[in-house]
Amino acid sequence: MTSKDMDNSFTSLVEAQRIILETCPVLGKEKVGILDSLGRTLAENLIAKRANPPWNNSAMDGFAVRNSDLPTDQADPEPVILNVIEEVPAGRSATRAVGHGEAIRIMTGAPVPSGADTVIKIEDTEPTKTHVKVFSHVKTGSHIRKQGEDIAKDECLIPRGAKIRSAEIGILAMMGKPLVLTHQRPRVAILSTGDELMDLDDQFDEDKITNSNGYAFAAQTREAGGTPIVLGISKDRPEDLKEKISEAANADILVISGGVSMGDYDFTKIVLNEIGMNIHAWKLAIKPGQPVTFGTIRRTLCFGLPGNPVSSMITFEQLVRPAILKMSGQTNLFRLTMHATFQETFSKRPDRRHFLRGIVHIENGVPTVKTTGNQGSGILTSMLKANALIDIPESVEQLNPGDMVSVQMLSEHVPAISN
Image (cartoon, rainbow, N blue to C red; front, side, top):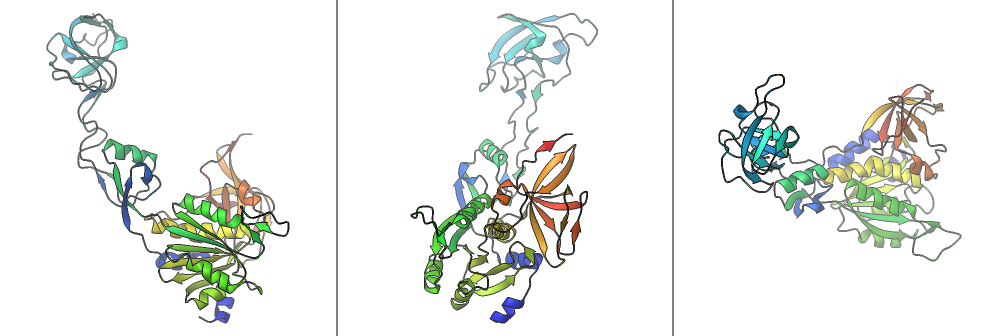
């Protein structure tokens, strides 16, 4: 592909995502501690080695009895008095079976003694040290958790490919699984370019701007499940850029911010060509974020993203995040989308897909969305205020209040408003 071809080509986001994900490998497997597995992708089927509950156990503090000994199921039944022969706390088993006219005091979670088929709540009794008076009748099996009612032995509890959340951690612990086989986390090297940049620990300079992109990328990487490797800042010199890129040789993904446009000091594309990068895509038909480069340097996926803060975060969201998720072994690669009622007027040319930063609310049970205000590609606060991206297709030229739009949710929290 010649430089001219790359400069004039125009790639849809869907096509770019297809190319990237077809290029993306799924990383290998490794065993990690149970708490370190949070957020990772399970690389094995988790099979239950035992049932849960492992035995019938009491769901209440009360008395284990034979149902045939209870008062008859009639209005104002006569209470019965049973002999209390033992007490069983959780963590212990009864040493005796419940016979006719007998009861065993039992605590929540304790195994139901042999001979008993029902548990009476302590609130429905009048106990003494040696006897218990029972006033009510309940069905056979009441207040007993049956063996295996939650989990059957040999059941597949969590399938391979599942993302491990707190609930999965609880199941892993229940099954006595201290080490978990998961997919490796992608290592994402992050490089910012530009003589105008200074890092957080540099001496303050009025003529420079802080490298916000590098740290935003690192946060986006960690949120997606990758491991960020922040390489710092490259000056606008090809030799400096080559040296910094060489430091990413062991990374799975390299993300470069800036230097992918057509300016006199935009060297990223030139340097990537010189070091033999196989370029798969160049321009994107989206706004913000048109100048984008994607390719491979040996086994490392390389993304050249725009330098403007919003453009960089949007393109990372649409391109790099799905790649991180696929490498991590995930199959759900994109954000949750939903429809919402647009509350403003908006117009654009029908040549690019727009991603407006939006605020979704639930108004009287209906999702609504409005923009965060100024949508300039340098207005980073538009990302700060947003809980969604409003996805407007290329073909749409005009939106009016009341029109339905698709939104990509960036946050699980959607505030509710009632009129």
